[in-house]
Amino acid sequence: MKQLILFLTLLLLFNACSRRLPPKKSSTVQEVNLKKYSTHTKTKKSSGKKSSKLDKLYAQYRAWKGTPYKYGGLSLKGVDCSGFVLSSYKKVYGIKLPRSTHEQVKKGRRVYMYELQTGDLLFFKTGWNVRHVGIYLENGKFMHASSSKGVMISTVRNGYWKEHYWQARRLL
Image (tube, rainbow, N blue to C red; front, side, top):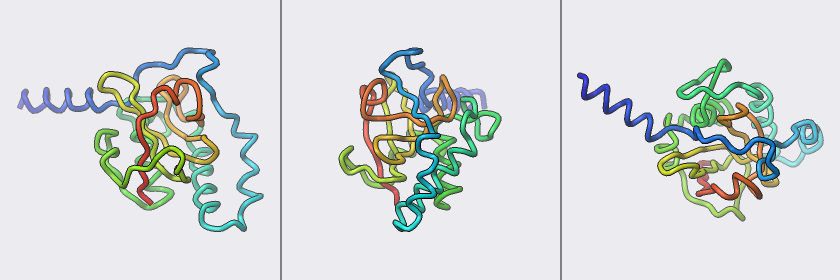
């Protein structure tokens, strides 16, 4: 029994979301101001399916915005990156994903950065065996549970996240 507990503990540690904090107040880390984009849901409703997905993702973001990072968390009291993605995909798309980034990266098909579409999963290598995941929104923006700032929107096109970008997966 002790070996099983030790094995499960080690498995969780190796499949954890990023615990390495991006540099504070650096020009390489960019938080995106949602106010600038919050009118999106009112202006693009008529453009169809993509807009509907985007509207749902922004609504999900607004519900979780600022939720603190908590390793293993799955609630508004605290959530980690894979938990936030799992909860968001279930709520927005009705799709059940695995709990860990290690398993989530095996789902769907790989897409290149220039092919990104709303709802694609973005994966980052933030340490030797540490992975991070977020959901692509639009125009280089993605939502995720940051270990330093909680649930937020960032950009993948420059700075910290561009440097650590690994791959994207399309499940939809």
